[in-house]
Length: 294
Image 1 (cartoon, rainbow, N blue to C red):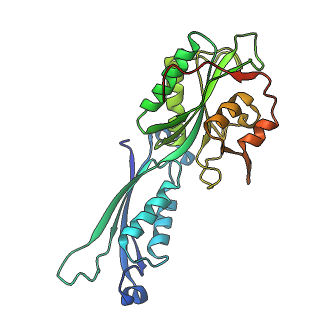
Image 2: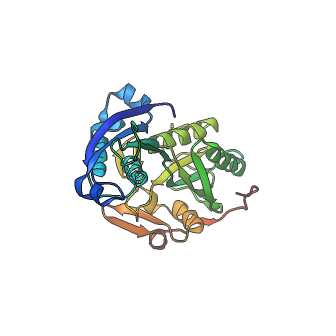
Image 3: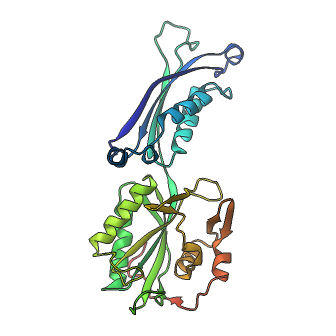
């Protein structure tokens, strides 16, 4: 990522330090923040929703600088970085915190700490295909996802074979789910998945039709921690609006993570096991063994 938004010289009076007088009297603190954000999309759309509101970030930085007293500016920098990474479009952040009046004991100009932190968000991706050499395609897709810069595949479920649901007459599917962690913002990850689909000949002419490869972003973030992204943007629907009803997603997901959870409504998170128990899974059965090991 080479695109950046830079905020320089954000200042506030804070009470950070290990000495009693620092906690009581306070002193000036200054922060510089560099946000790594994909700026191509907002550059084309001119839409604030496609970028990071840097005024909001600046206000949060001031809250940290002027807020709860901490002993170390290292801790101040860590809290600023955490606040910045709470914005889903921020993929990485660099934070420099300056303490120009620090009690150093010798003549000096400035003292500062600098940290860099990257997003590391859990994601769930569903895979499916029913045309061509299906298993070979799915194995190649798993490798391609793992090869994406900023993505680390953690677990891949066993394969399941699934009868088609809706659409024209077509062959049975093989489906699986992979669990990963990513630095990529949601829309960048989804665009990368679409490129992998296209590389395997995926087209979208017929809804519910046969396909060489389908990669769906099911969930981005941790719903129990409240860090999952909820989006009704037609280009980025999160969590996947039909995942809770799809046995061919829930079955392999549960086998990959017996404790899996999915947001099903605002303020409501459900066990995937409970969702699967309420779903018709008659058309889903064990598939072949993977040829590869993950």
